[in-house]
Length: 431
Image (cartoon, rainbow, N blue to C red; front, top):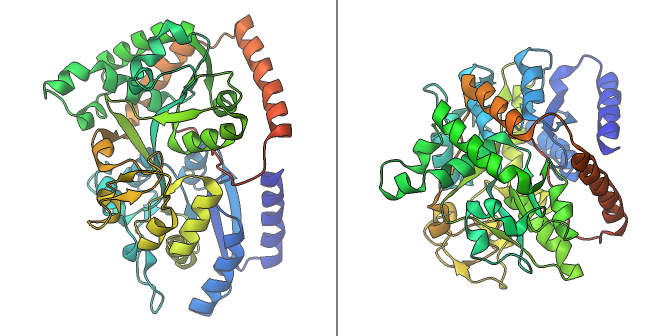
């Protein structure tokens, strides 16, 4: 319903604005990935800063490839878009993005002022055919891939390894994320533990291994896991965890916080683990497509999204973690319930003992055993083919039973869930 209303509003606004495209900003973002109240505030702020009116048209997508297809074919003239890391790599390599100029006249440059050194270094590592991703993208949100587990049934030690998914003790109580790229990356890290310990490869090396052997090894492992998995889920796994129908789920850190907070009032103790073997991080960022028609407003939008008070509101609305390294953002999420951790890698040298949620901000020692994924380019088809073979396209009776139970559970969950601070999941497909 929300998406339908947004699209209807977009159509009405476009008609009202006629062909005066220079005063329209078309934003293409993930569903539920923004505090929509900041839109009106941006329109007012933009006119105050530039003396020019602007009307924001927000449209949403749920799959990276859907967004990319529209832009790549030149069918849509979106001004600013929020793709995931590997798609940013692909878009830069395919010359689909414009550089983001940081000249805002008398308006403060919130982008440069509040950049986290960690995010800038991570974007430096994007593979973009010789171009620097920091020139074409500004980080929006980031997170980690780990394991949500129910502490009543799963010990901390059991959840500390990716090999928990082969443990028959949890048969029928495990959910695997419907995401070939994220799953492959964690499993190859586990399978190459001996080489990692001997220093023969690095975590970064493994993120570049799309060889037939690597694919075959991961496929063999997943075929062992398959009989134990209750479902390959895009977005329903977290509700199943909250309802205690699942005990283990490969998932994203934002969902780790969401499930924990939803489950706690019912006495369900859900936790989020980052396995000892290593894990990956993901990033979403703002970009300006080459077909954009209002690049000035697009630049100002990105700058506005980096203003600390706007950052805080978007984080509180979505439950994900901002790429901003500003002091104001750090102070906003200090929480005395937690032990001090070292976040100097993200916020600078003064942040060596910060009390905050380690699920959202892993400490330095934890983040040092992480890496980032990359675009598979022409090898993507091989990855997806393996994924299809593992899951199988033919649905058996048990599949329909599980789906039916999930639908009923989700309806009941929606009717009984508590109000309060929202931690959304975009349900994104990071394929």
